[in-house]
Length: 133
Image (cartoon, rainbow, N blue to C red):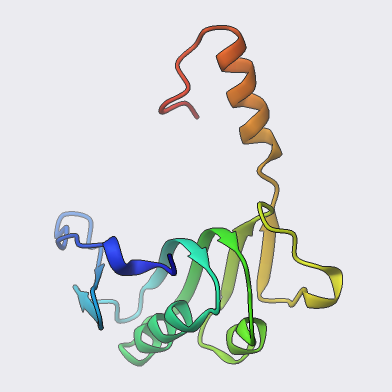
C-alpha cells in the first residue's frame, strides 16, 4: 500500500513519457522539465510518498503535477501536507468518504458508482467485464 513500490517501467521515448521507479527511494527516468506530470497510485494514506514525489518532480522542472488515486484515506496530516505541497490537484474516487470538514481545494472526489453500475449490468447480461470503457 502507499503507492509506487511496484512500479518499475522503462522510458517510452516515442511518447516522451517519463516513468517513475521506486523501491526504497524515488527515481525518475526521463525528462519532466516543462511538462505536466500525473502520478498514478492505488492509495493515498498519509500522503508522504505522493507529496515527496510531487515535490521532487517540481524540483526537476515539471510544469504541473497531479495525482490520481483509487482510494484516498488521508490519515494523519495528509491533507495539510497535500495543501502545502507542489501538487496542483489530487483526484480520488469516493471509495473512502472524505468528510466535508476535511475537503480541501486541491482534492477532487469522483464517484465510482457509474463504474460499479456498468459492471453489474455487464455481468447481468453475460458480457465481458474486463477492458470495457
